[in-house]
Image (cartoon, rainbow, N blue to C red; front, side):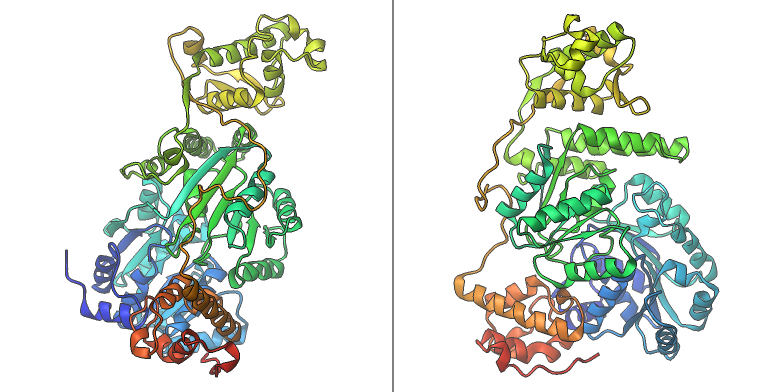
Length: 621
């Protein structure tokens, strides 16, 4: 392994306040600083931004960072300002005068980093500006956006191939936290990175606990999860539809949870205000569609919950990766049901996309269903999807409470026979509820109208309750032994491979459905979710005082609190209890600029001074 460049190490410590590089960061920095191209895959929170920020400071000229979202640019530039780095952004949020000011500063050599949206960069004006600048490098963040098979395709990203043609001597780095083998290859081809060195970190996020359960009144399940395990903590809840977002947010607010709704149906100014509230305030739960989240750097998100099934493993991994960016314990919690599977398959089949896209979407849906239904370690399943091996984590629901398995062959044969018998008796097919009613011998109005109390499968399934039959059916749908006809009222059909099971030549080992349990009293802990490590009583008081100080500074500077200092840094200070600037030096995240700007105040807070006692300096912006 090559030795770390002393200049890179000095910048890492003096500017960003970190004592050493992690993983392959040092190798990426050295390669890019030396003029090489790179493709970097690192998990969310793995420190991708340092891989291009430090080389930009080491090389002559300005580093151009291509970023897909305004909020992401604003937060990263704010954090760089706090660290004393000369950085700005160009996007549609700026007025004409502000944009001209940024361009003048870039031309005058007053910037080290310039963030640009791809649509802004690729305009004639944007390219003309680049032509006038000494360019240190190009960093293409969220590079999976270039893949049309990915979960967040952005057409403007395809045009970034022009950078290789127009500026062939400028090193380029593409970065993403989410890319399977196919997406990775597409990034390479579309961005002309065939000669780039690839740096692939482990996709594992050991601080995240993965938990997936069957739906049983999902909003009640969500409320219980938040109240019992994450009361007062920041989190994100993902829903599939705008209506579900608004209803879920209202339900949480009605039950005392500080929640905010977010989806693309809100006006731009309203979305920005809602996002700012989540980012800047402590303990806010954001309830959103997938329109929210890319580029959210809030480090203290303690949970990400899904009340609807994501479309792919990539999407799930990207979304859950927004939890626990500070490295402290966090939860990835999801509930799903048969209706989710039916809805996702219907959306794929009704899509106007070509057959190839529908096939790939269907394959990705099967993969996320496989993650839900697996009886093995969730983390191993995730890592395997991204081509990585591992060992059972001992920290997911399947590891902590291994699910029961059973030979479900006979149950599957009963269910599939019932589908066949009901269709044969009536000449057309029926949905899940009707088939389960027939199996369980329920003399409903519909069963009696169709005469299905006389079919041979009526009442042969009384040994299982409705939830257990739905679990069996969901797994059969996942295995394609039963299909759902979305065109004709979501009726059930037998798949081509069902004959193997009906003929007794194939056995099925199924996941056993969890029994339904009554709602627990509010405030009772399950002991399952990880708890953020607490400090001893005196230190906890210091930590809370530091958070109040940080809140005041962030409000004064009009930046998110975590751009001043992360919770992890505040906790380290509360543990060390420094009484001088020398003792404060070396705390993770406290670089030279922050030490000079805030050191005296921090020592005062630690020493017991109240906010009113502190003489806050004015904003340095």
